[in-house]
Length: 186
Image (cartoon, rainbow, N blue to C red; front, side, top):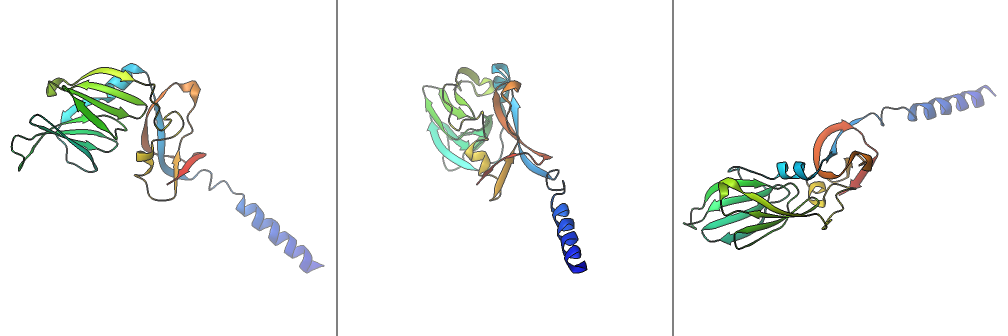
């Protein structure tokens, strides 16, 4: 009888130990939604000094320019007058960008939640001329984009569950956070 009581007590202790809160309070690196409006979107699309290539996507030529998509980040602009030695001029930051197209001095690019049209005739003053948010690509309101998920190690990729009451999710930021309830497998 004493052995039976000891066995039950040991099982109870093991079960209680497995119910600890340690796992739920564990900190992880995950994606946090960034909420905002049209003016915030316009602030995200910026032209900066040249940056090194890291994740090459589509490549386009336009006149003497060479444009190279940096997957998920934006577009590198090179002076391509000498194709054997292109010169890195500028970087146009476009969060979540995967695809671009060019026509008549306008750059058409997807971003996390829509398509933008940029006038690139003056590289020092790239201008947002149109934003089309009817395109919902990866349903940015609910999850980070597939290209962001794919940058993380294989397994569960955690993200903070979006809250519609906070507004429109315009992009996602990778941060250290308490382990959230939402995740995707990659």
